[in-house]
Image (cartoon, rainbow, N blue to C red):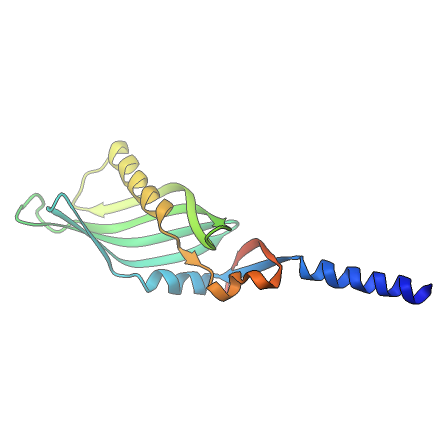
Length: 166
């Protein structure tokens, strides 16, 4: 009888181990490397305004991601500004993991500061910039797990992703 009880006990442990959840930790340096691989990022709006993001600094603050980036705005064929507007923008966002795709997106974005030399800006421009960045980040993941991390044959599912310094 004892052998039977031990066999059931160990079989239960093995089965529970096979169906347990996985936890991944993504370091600040890994996230920074993923973002740096996509830089510089350039986008032209209305065939006139060329925006360039050249440098992004990532800082993990509590359960949020703070991003500071340098931005430059050039106009094609127009001289709207005395000099090319450039400066920095700081935002804070919450990372959210989508288990179906294995991707991490930044949501709940808040504009912390915007200092762009050569442009007078107020609340409307800041709200517009915040919305543009939030829209961009809502459809582009900042991190994607490797397919090998998402193998179905492990019998495990991803329970959480933690961001940490490192």
